[in-house]
Image (cartoon, rainbow, N blue to C red; front, top):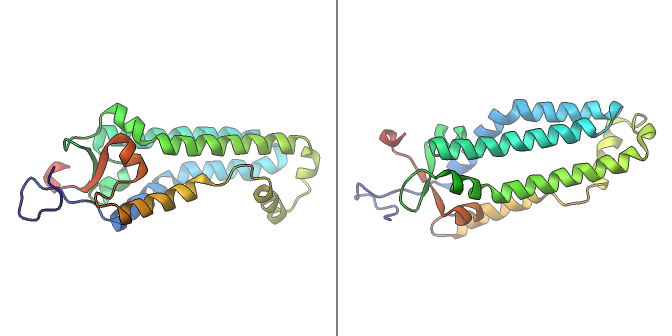
Length: 192
């Protein structure tokens, strides 16, 4: 596979870190309505319990992972990637098949599993003292959530690791690109 040769018509150009970050921002904005529902469930859970927040977490996780798998398989990238004119391809310059689209999301699936476990453990912790939960003011409530986090925020560490992989890896592959044997490239207008 030819990479970054300007005069070769078959060459591909690797997507920059900046474009990938822009794509994540667009995807965040697209997912914001779903995330708002999750945040609303968290706020509402102050009065009625964490079960609604736990359910919203599970639903949001399925929506987010499903979104990424479907669009990578069907269109070569999420709406964010398509908006900034980058796409995900396999080692043969083709869109990912469904298997590799799922494989590419394995790190994100594990991140959401750990997050859901953390929410579940907090649910159990607070159900033991649910009466006192409604007496918390908003700032103390979130401070207590931080103190009760049983698993670290793996998503932050994973995104930092992914950025480091892009910066210090010739093919700009993140860990999930390595798992799926995928690469993120600039897309030509005629390829969209």
